[in-house]
Length: 267
Image (cartoon, rainbow, N blue to C red; front, side):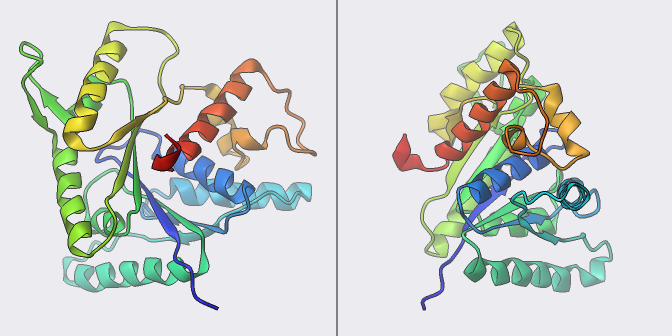
């Protein structure tokens, strides 16, 4: 039988605190629900948020005799000895490459700072998803704007980095990178700041080559579910006694919308 090659989804932003691990876990569970064989790679192994999330899920399933979809897990801890980084980079790339023939999807959660693991993750990307908050500071990573003259802007440091990634992938003969920016942990309340951020992102999408996905709201339920390793997609499962609120149903739809948005031909 011919080997298939996983679609690699990299969840990344050159900034911490944007909810990358939560997005990674929810997408992994959503794809597993649909019958895909999914692996999750925690490239931020020192902090290990995604690793703990999956371990919490494994423990919750054992303790409650449940059979929930759980992605396979690879955790990579950064090497700090500069003399060993070249070998560690090669080893990390080899471990990711080894997953590709055995899975339908590999989801890579990156560090919140640019290091060699951050760089290696991007080299594997078929789809890149960048969560961003409704903050002008976060926007600056995508597009640096002179707010006195908003028509004047240029690529922020992360958008510039993604441009270099696109050139690298093209040189390897890979299809064009499917870059998606999604508002995450977004307040339900309207604000001038939020409107500014997403107004600028809509204008920047064509200039910098990304698609802007429907936003994901900031909901307490995401924080509450982490300790059990659950996602909003699990709340209606048999054996889980969660009363679904309107907010929970809306959260499930937001995750479904992001998963569907990965396919550009569906838009």
